[in-house]
Length: 130
Image (cartoon, rainbow, N blue to C red; front, side, top):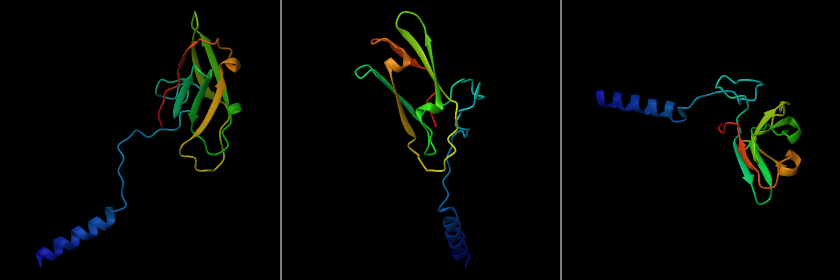
């Protein structure tokens, strides 16, 4: 009888926890606030970034609810001397749409659009994460 009770308790526990997922991670807003986001960053988080010397483009991947466009961002270009530049992307318009876009949205700027010389050394200063 005691064995059956233990088995029943285990079965009920398994059923209750069967759909439970525990994630050990920091939970925070998407970090697109103006000014310091509380983590010491002045620029919002990017999902990813690519700098292509060949095609002279910078592509960022950002959080999106389906309506994110390049015009939603200000791009700060800081000339650091020689051909070195720090670039920061700040969201200035929220994406208030309701689409599910877990992979984010890719946005691209050319070196020419950003006023960068052909062989510039570029550092993107936004933190990368989710």
